[in-house]
Length: 100
Image (tube, rainbow, N blue to C red; front, side, top):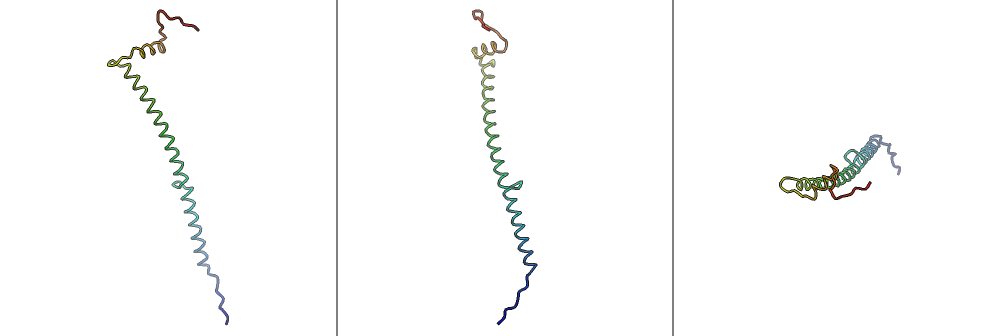
């Protein structure tokens, strides 16, 4: 009994190659593309860094808000006023000696 020879099917070969190429492209795009996993990791890291900067800036704003309130007409902190006058205006007390 002899088996008939099967001819090579170019259509099947093209289908397999095309499927492999498209699958490879989509796998690469899902990892390295503009909306891929690596970009998502970069965005998350950048978001954490920006949140840290935001927290630092909010703390700085709170310090300035506290100082502003302490120098307001409603609540005047004389020690802070004295400190600011000395630092900014260069005032010194009558009984103080400055060494340079």
